[in-house]
Image (cartoon, rainbow, N blue to C red):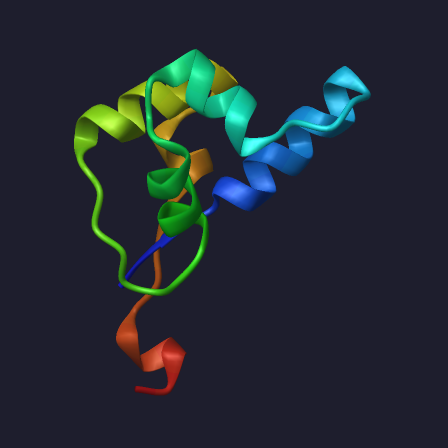
Amino acid sequence: MIRFRLKEVIADREFKVGKRVTFEEVAGATGIHRTTLSKIAGPRGYNTTTDNIDKLCRFFGCKVSDLVEYVPDEELGE
């Protein structure tokens, strides 16, 4: 399963800039709808496009591996 670490990346950004970073701010800067950001940050198994991953990496100045993680199904207990 692919795990998105969007919440963690946002928390890192908040720490660095010293202010709250909202989905609205990320949506405005990336063009990714706020609902899509919520889905990426939320439930397991959400599927997004590589274009969205590219936009998020550009906005946060991070690598794909900072935003996306592979977790084997065995570790999920499924």
